[in-house]
Image (cartoon, rainbow, N blue to C red; front, top):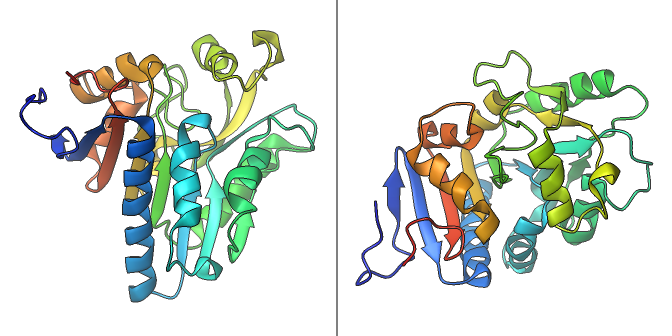
Length: 261
């Protein structure tokens, strides 16, 4: 699957069932992913009355989300939005909350039919169970996600990821590499500021969506991408399971792609 220097890098190749494309810059990657997502949403809305989508909250998704918000011809009033994880222990108005980040970068920018935010207070276990019920009411059409430096998808870090998880949403303890990533991404000032627990959609819940769009830029993600593409399908790199999804697209930039020239 090594990229041939004579072939444009945005030509798709395969890793298992997953389609993989690399772009020269983060901006080109985000724009291409947004175009594909917008086309998929428009197509789904032409076939069915409503669409349900799950979104990741992370700086890695910002370029794609900005381009998606600017896409024309999407009737957002027929789209219901969810997000895939949320910290436990932050104040309701904390800017670090993923719901707040998505409010700023997506939820507040287009007129969704509904936005279902994960609200962990006052009882995270009850909140997780209620969110699972909302997700289960009707199938999820699309998930827009990323991959963590430890290979996590959502907050399914290697120590807690379970490919046969009986739960759709659960409370997890974040591992140190995941918490450090939040500091490296400038989301928190220090490691000690990062909450130790979160609510997350589980791996099986993500994998049951009709189509996955995975956007992963940056040098810090290169080792995780390598493990995703080439390593064993194992919870040591939870994202490796994406190779088994029948309709998953992975978008990389030259910094994150281990095969980029």
